[in-house]
Image (cartoon, rainbow, N blue to C red):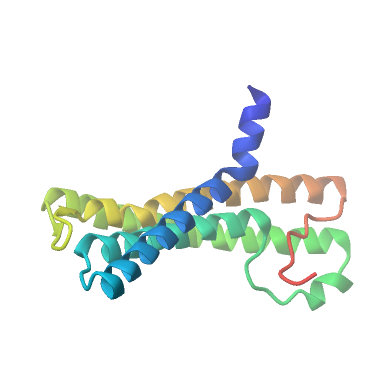
Length: 171
């Protein structure tokens, strides 16, 4: 059971991103074929691909937080002592956590208002709440990953260890 939770912790966002990428590519490919070969296109294809992309963006933000892959300039971090580096990473996580909680709170309000007033997406005739849920869902994942990152940063700071650097874009 522990191994399963470990796999989910390490790969949940990747699996979701893979599914969403696959869906988007398939739907866009089908829509291009339908439009240029059969001279017909559907409303649902383009719309669902767009909304899948919105979910993909917010889930990818959580994956980037987990991997510390957000864009940053870390030239100064390489010359700082380990403890100060850990403290700066912790400060960055704390500030990002405050921002994520703020966005989560206000996005929940939009989501609940959409449910209350039964707003629908015209082309799909589906509740707009499903689309608006992407933001609180993504930021809930971001908050979870920030909490995990802060836990690791605090233990690195206490133990005087090298802080977790994250993944680099070009190596």
